[in-house]
Length: 524
Ligand code: GDP
Image (cartoon, rainbow, N blue to C red; front, top):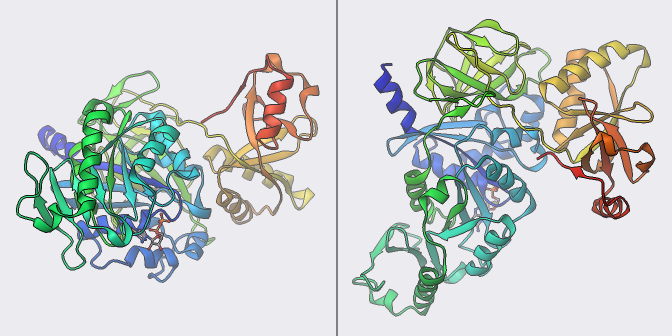
């Protein structure tokens, strides 16, 4: 590509993740977006894959059992002149640190909320990571076809719990059985909800009265919606594109993914404001221009193949600049080694196609035989670069781990060290007994760990669940080993830094009361 073509290609990319609590409707909305992109022809395809009725790929055994596949990790399609990359953030029992790290590779996020439930815990956690990155966050209040909570309540809760300004882009007219449509504030029109024709639009005059639609003008629910819009105009937040850009204001859309109501309106508006790939910062603080001639990218996730006959893994790379071409030579910053990228995969929704070229915003999958670690930077050109470190996340689940066969300590240690370095799980050692303790944000990480220890390192491990704990780091200068008890276990992390694993928040508060001068900190 010429410089100009490269710049044009970059500006067309929209790379985002959908964050939500399980069952809020992420899969359903993803599927509608894939339908718009012409990637799937019928609703139900993605769902079928999720429930395992889809053609099986020969990928991870665990993934296969759960009916998800690597191809659904990244979905790429063209829509409205843009190239869309949706990165999946696995939830349910597949929730893991990878879910968090995926958010390091996107330029914006769509938050799907069940309008009957409001903000749920997983949404909150994922939101906080997006907020920390300062990326734009767009909200879709889903399931409007069912009776949910008062829209104003939902907006209040959103602002209060997540500490972000909300700007409703539209407002429901009725809800559940009485749903008539949405007052589309952004496009200044009403979108009527009709089963037979989902996209009947009614123009509004300057006083927000429907043009040529007596039925709507006489609908008391419409009057209600209009009153709420008036209230928002006078007492609500101002629409502020600068605040949207930095993630300080979230545009909110109401709709229903299941009946495909308001989804297209949402997506079209979203694409107007969602950012193209922007410059990524290096460790030194230099911003790398996406349209730079030189290629660069970083590994944000490594997925191991659970099939023992295929030991390969896939390293997911977010392209940050330049153009990737198959067979190109790159440098790996950490090892300062050169490597040729010939075995690479791009992600379309249905197939794993061999990628020919990719630009900033795209994701490529590198078949990896053990060269890559999470957070690695690869680049071309003379200037050596390392992108900013990926953050460490505070694990919540813990197990005590040991080798089943005490004679096989060597392979046990080798396996643990490599898997921990790779970022599969986090390792802690107990202060007093030097026991190994693993930490994770999701149960899946332990299962994958156990499976890979056995298959890749021939090391059978025993894992004794310790349950949920609240991890807090303590300044070593303030540490007194006598502070430790069965309710706050003292351990060391990989770097030798001390932390407590608190049994629950009650134990944490008790500790804070007892040692008011001790400063405890969490990672993200
Ligand atoms: P995910 O876990 O967030 O991916 O949620 P799914 O997309 O699998 O949806 C969870 C359940 O909610 C499924 O039974 C969906 O059919 C249902 N659902 C999703 N969107 C809507 C909606 O707009 N209205 C209604 N009534 N149900 C929905």
